[in-house]
Length: 112
Length: 113
Image (cartoon, rainbow over the protein chains, first blue to last red):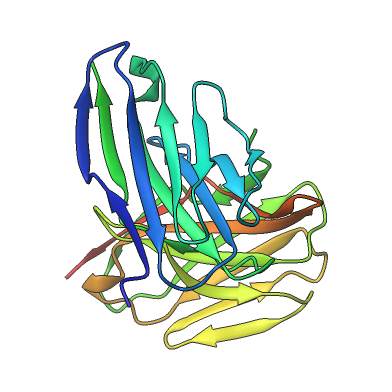
């Protein structure tokens, strides 16, 4: 039981490049979330998915797209990376409508 | 933007000391959760509170849901070096599209052995 896994762990992109961050959970959770964490700003919600086939915007969705591929997987895509998207990205999951979210180890992204 | 005020922003304490941190909101909420994040890791849930006035312990950690429903406190007793990390409060929000959390900016705790 690995919990929430994220790939890659580290990534460096040039401005304008695209990439997809992958997230998978093996806890049979319905809800999945993507956050970004910047120094001194806590965690901010980018997008979330309450169930397979649904996605909704969070607090800071601009510049990102998501795909809930199936119940286990929720990916985050940067179509044209910008330096302002340099951050640590965390994926999380929760059972049903529970508030108790379980986080992955994060992806550290640098955009130059 | 952020609607939670978490304080203090940082704390430097000696091993064995007790620690107290709090989180306040301008609005009433029904759920408070406390997370800990160690360096290079994702946040880990410590305690969840669901009722005003509720006091819940997890080992040396104790958290309380304020009676006004606008604040919460986390106490750590007899701190040890492995308590180092960032502690986040969060409050739950129910939307028609699902449940969400909003996080405070965190309290950075340093414990000197």
